[in-house]
Every structure is written in C-alpha cells, then in structure tokens.
Length: 153
Image (cartoon, rainbow, N blue to C red; front, side, top):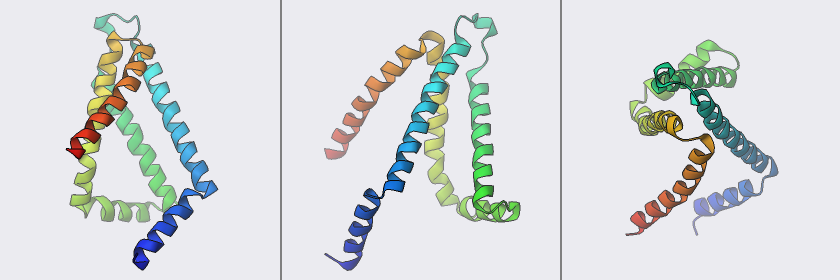
C-alpha cells in the first residue's frame, strides 16, 4: 500500500469515527428530512380544495424557492468570507465565473432539481401529500437498484 493510500484510508477512518462530524451529518440529514416533509406537506396544503382557475402556477413557486435558495447561499458565502462582500464577490467569481467547466457540473443537478420541483407541484394537485411521499419512498429504492444493475452490466 502506498503512503498516500495509507494516509487516505487513515484519514477516512478517523473522519468516520469523529463524533462532531457524525453529529453534524445527522443534523444535516434531519434538516433535509424535515425540509422535504414540510415542503411536500405545505405545497399539498396550498393546492388542496382550490378550484383549478385559482391555482397558482407551479413554475412561479419553483422560481421563488430557487430565489430564496440563492439568497441563503449568498448569505452563507458572505458569512464564510467574514462578512466581506468584496471577498465573497471574489470567491464567487473565482469559483463560478472563472471556472465555467466547474459551473457546468452544477447545471445538470440543478436542472433535474428544478424539473423535480415542478413535477412535485403538479403531482400534489392530484394526490394528497401522504400518498405522494409513500410513492416517492417506494420508487427511490427501485431506481437505486436499477442504476446499480445498469452500472454492473
């Protein structure tokens, strides 16, 4: 085993047993679960028993959600850079604008997320939120199994 492979495995095992990192990962998982559940519940509630002529456009809700994410990410970047707008601007330029190849790597997941969020609103027009969540929970392991079988063959 090379020294770089040994140090990589040692750092991986150290990070796997690091309690603060484990707690942080669990916290992130909890926040994501609560966020997803609340999004589905509140989105379904906002579309329940509303006449079709009074429904808002799902694309409007998705664009507003993406705008909120942009503001939160911008605030996190400013915080990370010590509340310096100039430093945050330089970091954004260096990491996104000056690295178009890296920015393009974000495009595919972002487009899929936007498409999925639009589908969420359309699905919640016809399904209640509990049925939607159960169908989603059932379909994700099947997709995961399919992708694993495709990569093995």
